[in-house]
Length: 108
Image (cartoon, rainbow, N blue to C red; front, side, top):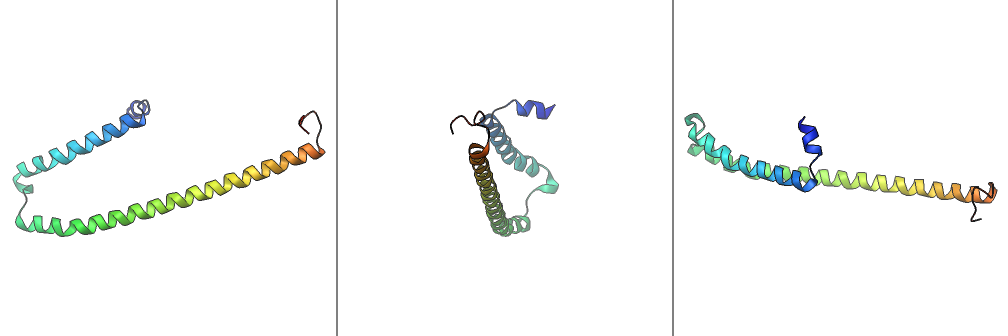
């Protein structure tokens, strides 16, 4: 049911929904967690969070870089495959014009 609903939306609408979801999540979640005494931040947890933040950002950057590299490689492979197929179709067309029935290739 959710997938039927989401497939009926445009890409811009999906982007806006995701942005609003994450903004609300990032704004409301810390307030809820701070209200629970067990999850209230201490000096040690704050220091640990700040020290881990740089590592998490670095690893996220590396992951995005590798994903971008993989996407570009896949795009180049598909592009070369399409180019090779187009060349083979062009060669087949030339052979049909040269050896085929003139009614099949009227521009010969």
